[in-house]
Length: 441
Image 1 (cartoon, rainbow, N blue to C red):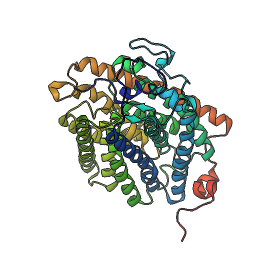
Image 2 (tube, rainbow, N blue to C red):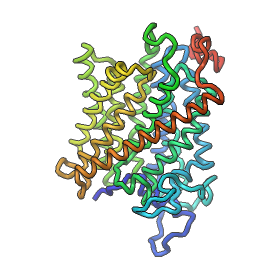
Image 3 (cartoon, rainbow, N blue to C red):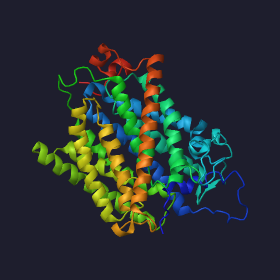
Image 4 (cartoon, rainbow, N blue to C red):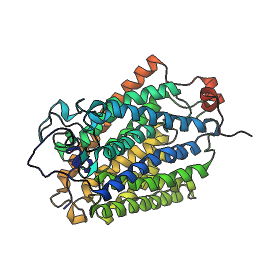
């Protein structure tokens, strides 16, 4: 039987068990070396998604004069968020103090600081069957890649100092609370609602996508946007980065189970099918609308399918994964080519179009295809009730993320300014902000 609750909530309920004596009658957990080896691998795969996967995917899509700025942002975010995760992020996301199943308290929205500075961590600390240090590192990689996704929206025009300050505040005030609401375990808001999110449809993709939309609206359009060509400077790098993201996604999704079980096989096949179906959905949509399928489109289609299947991968059958991936490919293509054009915003690398829209579609369809009648793996699921729960989770994430992200952007603008000046943007962020070039001829 598949647990109805979010995958990481299983681990969150155990996250403090290593250092706080809960029920002594419970069976003492023992180390599983196989699951431990896999979770170490999964953590490395998720880090690999960000560095170099995401950096290459984004870097190839911008103009050559801004290539290195994407790498510096990804590395800067990794260093900054990694340190903040140790200082207080892990505690805010996964501490379960004062939480009671079905009840709403302050800690239903964010964890306490009881685990700040990783208090209580020791070589003998276990979360389930794996060392707590491995669990902490795996969760850290999620915390790193989520804000890094946002960087694609403001590529080529946000100051590096502003980007770092925004990411520090966003991680603290948006990522940590939303991740806790989803994966905090019994008593967390979305857990109480019965929201299904196995590996991050709300906490990662919708969260990053909505923040990206807020950022590109707050910053305004790039200098020359729509008036001068801004082609991707190296699609080979973008395709290679997309392939790395696809490979790393198996660590992202399968690792969210916290170990290995029979369910791992279902998560793996659903992840693969979602990506393949996303390619088909995007490819034929582009073929029909534009007359030719593009390499960039196929890469984006794979990512659209992966985004959509992320919340659903442990709860749906293969047929459900096929439909979710296909629809996400179509919907994300329309979001990037139609919605963005009609609304007129400049999301440089289509973060909202891919992650926001793909996350929304995937999260809602999780409630549809999790039911046994459609091949789903949640035996007691009622489609209407579950879809309502999914929509509530999506709505809470979108509203909270947009409002707080917008406020953070205004604060950052007042403190250090958001946007590079015209001369910096014209020269390119690589030289102007970092005194380096990606290519020297």
